[in-house]
Amino acid sequence: MPSISAIAAQALQRRIAEGEFPSGSALPSQRELSDQLAISRASLREAISTLEALGLVRSQPGKGVFVTAGSRPDPARPLPGAGSMTPQALIEFRLALEPAWAALATRHMNTEGRQALEDIQRGMEDALRVGDLVMAADWDLQFHLQLAESSTNPGLITIAHQFREQIGHSLRLPFSNPGGIWEPADEHREILAAIDAGDAAATAAAMRRHLAAAARRVGLELQIE
Amino acid sequence: MPSISAIAAQALQRRIAEGEFPSGSALPSQRELSDQLAISRASLREAISTLEALGLVRSQPGKGVFVTAGSRPDPARPLPGAGSMTPQALIEFRLALEPAWAALATRHMNTEGRQALEDIQRGMEDALRVGDLVMAADWDLQFHLQLAESSTNPGLITIAHQFREQIGHSLRLPFSNPGGIWEPADEHREILAAIDAGDAAATAAAMRRHLAAAARRVGLELQIE
DNA sequence: AGTTCGGACTGGTCAGACCAGTCAGATCGG
DNA sequence: CCGATCTGACTGGTCTGACCAGTCCGAACT
Image (cartoon, rainbow over all chains, first blue to last red):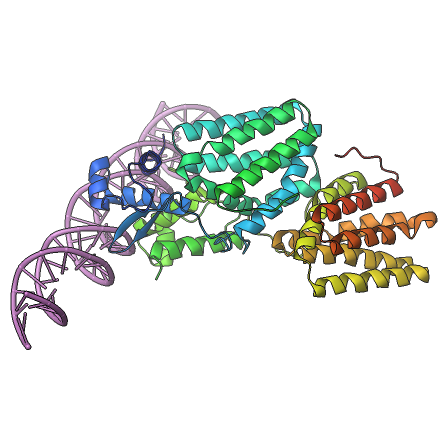
């Protein structure tokens, strides 16, 4: 049973995605909104903190809480807590590593690893269905880490875990655009299809497309092979 | 002036990254933590909501708030699992990384970096001329590390230094074959040519050939794209 | 010894209060 | 009449203190 603030966050996310609160507009006041949702202002504020961390909303003292969803963050500004790496550098970094470990994972895939990927994918889709972006991002990260794990390469596995937070930041960015929250999951399905076909090159290509799409979602134009 | 809950979130994030709260452990209780930070529990809870949205932490009712993120490891060397890499895994690993950072280095190359590469290359050739294989291997490693440096990607640079031991070991092996002492240096020249042509894809391809050749020199047959 | 039960924790939620900005409209002075 | 200023009704930010519902350990009872 999710907490009431998590439910409120999902509800607000949904209403933002459906266009009830357009980008740039202000949410109703916290007092009004908490009344509307029949929860305390404290719980509402926790929900808003969540949405703010996800980049859907920004609150300005004395003015209101404004929807920022869909607006592009500056790709050159380093992410707080991302180890000083910019979104641009993160995508370059991931483009270097992830297609490679995805290809290796394809060659070394076994029923156990495949089942783990399936469970993760279903978890992500379930989370998206209820609009739980926090859990969805969590499963998203798990998907990429599990792929690294399945590569069986100790160096790549080590790196994947070492840069876990940075990767997490990178794949969380696109979720601030409410229109395309299903795109990552769909692209994961394509990766899984290539894995099931046993085609390592196709898996690497699907992963490259996935990362390129992620870059595009956050407004990055990238020049890659 | 950031809100106090944002400050608290940052403080906690830092303490987690520094390893004060290891992955999997529980944070101090909210009452204790709010006391420690001299803020109200309400503000603390907003900070925790933020961290939870970022996937750093998960709170479980009745139990506590648990850290899900690992501490950011000190960029100083030894990494677990890295020492146990087979020559095969090492080549796979390098094939994932080095063509990528070589391509990036091509795009970001400047006269300074290019001069450094030239000095290294000449050093290696001089060492080979006098038959000093120890020095040659040293210059060889320098060449690869300088390429990583020139990629300007913080993540790739970090990795290059973390795995310098492994990479160094990997490229020292081929020198035990007296016949092909000059091959690595020749392949480096090809890489430099691609860099001078400004052709990132060609640089990556040259690096792939270099690594494939290195694998062949130590008797590895590899199945790669 | 094994079971049970109570109490001391944990996080989750709430109501109500006060502060500090913001902003528009009323008021006052020219 | 116009413009500067003041006032008050907003906004979000913070705090306090309370209660609920799980969790867990240890003491007491069987």
